[in-house]
Length: 521
Ligand code: MN
Image (cartoon, rainbow, N blue to C red; front, side, top):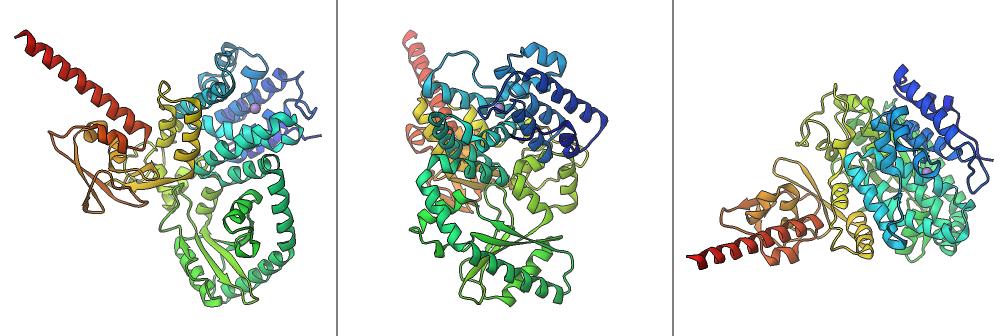
């Protein structure tokens, strides 16, 4: 039987533990426990196992008391029949709006695929108001994915596929690698049973050799660092997720010997300078594999991930990936956006100065990626909503069919994004193959509607030029410029298309109006 997280366990993970936070969490715990008292899970366990686990995981991620309370209460409206008014009276508006955000559609207005996409749209709409909704939803999905074995077989595969195609990529985009990997590995066996078995077998064959190589490298490395007078560091083994290994196997024609990062050695050091010092020592000790050095500190991944990766020949005929990062980067790489919603991280950031720069623009007083976040202000969650979430929430419901909406989710939003910069250094997040037109509409509709040209990295380019990661884009405007049908066809984002259509139809009406007036005279 699954263990029910106790209130004490959740409180002990809570940070900060002020009286008000403790009180709110305990009250939510008790309320949810009573509300679900007579219900059971598919596993036969008491239903409360589930919300208690969600609350615990949220506390563990460092989320605030309101989010934890909402996590404990997240199924009260939908599954325990508690009225919204009661939840608001017992707690407050903030808790109620978080719980509502994660609650699926109440009325049966939609069925099948429509119902499913409508729930997703609602989820993104609620998330656009408050990013914490999405974090609760992911945590909810994570526990459900981990208990898939008890779910009836007909539902199981559907939930597993949906988790792999929608929820895991969302977690990835938010930089929450712990959640992403857990979602993937819990769903993989039920979504692709044969491939899972094959991957597991291959991994088993390699396990001992990988472990031996890692252990030896770790020992050697500790000696090398000690000889160089480096004292403050710690190492850990990173094991690649099974699903992620499978995806790589597919790309490598199932040749497992071509994958060098099934196990990687992580070195965590206090400062940025230490990272580069360690890289030097590693390369002095072992010859690096050409083309495998990736400096994600200087060039973070689109989701904010920072680390130095290098693969080295270990001298026994094999190779090993080594990842070097600071403690702050490490925490961010595990919890992503969730690590930015806590007071202590905002304070810490000021001291360390590292981190997910792109997220700063969403914090209060943001707008410039260079601006420092005030240490006194706790970020309001609603302000930290990334642009892509807002875009998903505002997708045109009239013109977009359910299939198309899901397809957009899979392709546009999660698999490929480019991150480009404004001349002031703000980061703009766009789908792959986006053009200066999409960029302009992502910044400001007024500017976009007067666009006459664009400069990318200082060079004039046509408005159809695809943008690449790291491009600096500048829009040139002219009073006489106006949107055209062609812009509409070139545009990649839903937002740009929508705005261009609006501008075109406004102009059509204007023209018609002008003709009418002319006739009168
Ligand atoms: Mn739930």
